[in-house]
Length: 279
Ligand code: SAM
Image 1 (tube, rainbow, N blue to C red):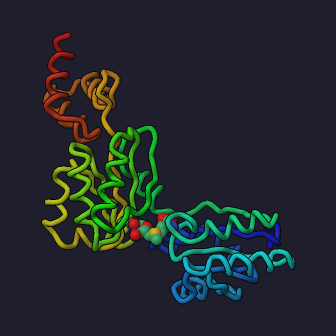
Image 2 (cartoon, rainbow, N blue to C red; image 1 turned 45 degrees about the vertical axis):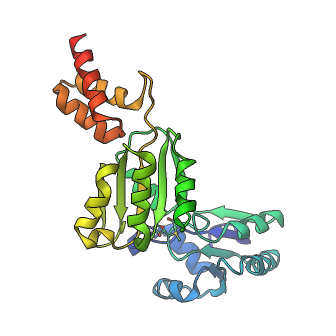
Image 3 (spheres, protein in one colour; image 1 turned 135 degrees about the vertical axis):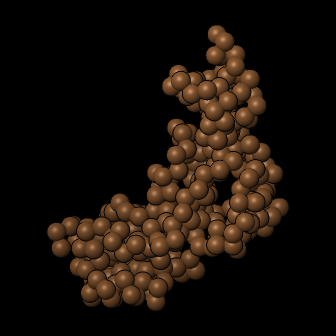
């Protein structure tokens, strides 16, 4: 192995497309003696395909503590361990954080590998213009708690990134529309897979759009919301509006586009655009 040996390697695995496994990840998984896996049965086919000879250590949500102790023991005896989850990056809405913390606390080395992650993959294609984003992951599954969690995010001016399961996507989007009002929602589904789709639309229209076709509710979701529109002149809606007007777009079209992109109110942007054009 060309890498330093007795370390915990945090290895992202593909979200769907096996070609997304990096060469470095492949090399690590092929050469380490131990692989700590969220679900050893789930990861079996990938490891088999790679011809990875490593023995596996189960490392899931319910045994992270014991798994961490076993991993530290291996590292202390000079053996390398790779940590993988079912898909994407371990520790990102997945088990792993406790293991990493224990390994670091034991004074052993942790080596992270860059690679697939649904949140960053989705964001890169979202077209949202917010300069910052907040990764939230999964919202609470119970309606009341979910709405409360959303309320707490209402004033955030950065884009908000959520993970969601297919059986909850309708209720979550409905709650988002109730809490946030006018925003842009980007729905990324089945990333890197055969039925990948990325759709951007006003949040108020999202529930109907999802209901129009049952296929739109299937698969794995990343939901991304534009941040709270600033109410000042320097607000995101106005910033985009000015850019579009400067490009020579007609007032109506510029207001509509600026509203779709930023989630700011279309009528207010239209009024503002008329004024700006007159000036
Ligand atoms: N650790 C993973 C990562 O780095 O993205 C996330 C694991 S989390 C248990 C699983 C959730 O991630 C899914 O419910 C979905 O919200 C999102 N996700 C995973 N794969 C996805 C994909 N191919 N397309 C869209 N979302 C996906």
